[in-house]
Image 1: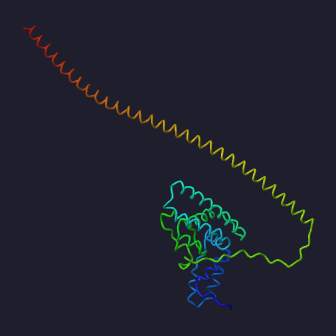
Image 2: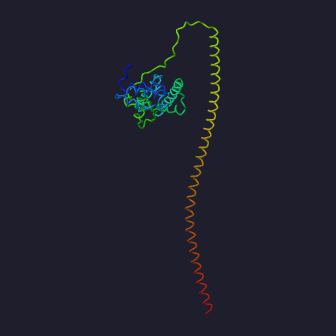
Image 3: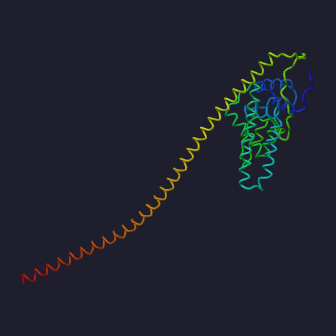
Amino acid sequence: MAELPRDVLSIADELYGLPLPEFTPARDARAKELKGTDLAGQVKALRKPSTAAWVVNLLVRREAAQVDQVLAVGTALREAQASMSGDELRALTRQRRQLTAAVTTQARRTAREEGTRVTDAVADQVEATLTAAMVDEQCALAVRSGMLVAALATTGLDPADVAGAVAVPEALGFTAPARAAEPPPRPDLKVVPDPEADRKAVEAAEELLAATEADLAEATGTHDEARSAYDELEARGLQLQAEIDELRGRIAELESAAEEVEDDLSEAEDARTEAEDAVREATRARDAAAAALDRLRGA
């Protein structure tokens, strides 16, 4: 029997580099091999990574240069953030998004080559994990370990649950070795020129180029239409906002006028009450005078 790894970190590095469907059987087999040792229980407890975590682990091993670029940009951003202006930070944030989006696209392609289809939802988690690695140093360590079991997400303001996202605590600070995909064995045959095959290859390449150019033209047209629709909606939105602001100003004027009318109404009510009291008093005085006159005439 081959010599077994001396610690759980070595075993975890091996297991988390496997294709996703192979993880659980390989882990259980490894734990069985280690039965009777202190490592058996630790290996058995290793959690199967989520699809997003597995994609990031794969990316770390297959595309180490791109991951290093992401982490290097993140380090530079964190170091420079305190001294940057708002405009500079916004520009770098856009660059960060472009980089993480590009690396996520590469991750989807790499996973597809390994036989795993990455949905949009999983891709969003992969991109969020890469973003977290750029804004948080502990997240960067977790990603570089290649032993994620769960996706990461953080804004950089609150600490991420890094300990719960890696296979073992010792993974933080561990650097997963880059591993290129193994090419299929090639027979050692003498290459014989084949003009017909070359001609077909050229034709296939020309057809592919024509197809991609057509796809590009279609995508460009769709983009232009979408951009035009966006511009129209944006202009409409600005127009509606201007009308809303105008109506709000008019409402403010009417509310002010209503308050003035309310004040005038209160004063008018007081005046009306006083006038009614005067009318009643004058009526009593008139009635008293008429009664006095009637008495004098009767006498």
